Every structure is written in C-alpha cells, then in structure tokens.
Length: 126
Image (cartoon, rainbow, N blue to C red):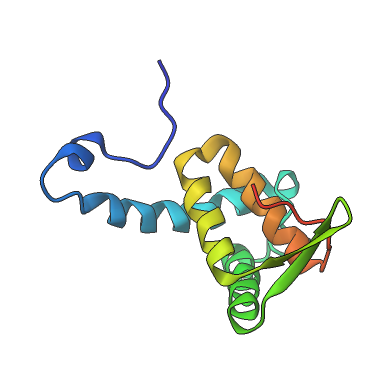
C-alpha cells in the first residue's frame, strides 16, 4: 500500500493534532523546490530560473506575486461560458487540497498558478 499525503496519522488521532501544521509549512516550501527540480515539466519553471541568484526564489516570488494580487483584487475565470470569481480563499483552499495528494496536487497547483500568472481566463480550480 502507498500513502501519499501530508498527515502524521499518530498526531492526527492524538490529543493535540498540531504537528501536522508544521509539516504543512515544510510541504509548502517543498512545492517550490519540486517545481524547480522538475524544470520544464512544471509550468511555473521559467528559462533563467536555473541561474544561482534566481533559483527556487524565482518560482516562490511569482507565486507570492499572484497571492498578493488575488488578495488585493479578486481574479476571474471563464469556463463553459460562465464567469467565476477567484478569491484569496479559493487559492488558499487549492493549496491545502494539493497538499493532501502531492503526486497529483502539486502539478495541478503549478498549472493553476501558471494560468493565473499568464492571465488565462480558462482557469481550473482543482
């Protein structure tokens, strides 16, 4: 059996259920290193990221810029001729959901952020 996710089962079933929050911070940081390591396989990677001064920080900055923008002003998506507002809460929920299924969640999250960065309107919140 293979388990893929961000939960410490002992902590989750224990009395305090707090250690998983620290794990989530670690997993969120690993999102950027995974995007960098995967290079062209993850859409958030850009030519030039391989330079020492840019590196993982370039990806982290791009995601941070999107987060700041959506926090300041809602974005929108159009799918099947229907408009949908994308709020800061929506983005945060997409991040949390991606952390529970890393193998599928991180690539989907990278696509989502890339679509927002490119101002695509056919954005999917998965």
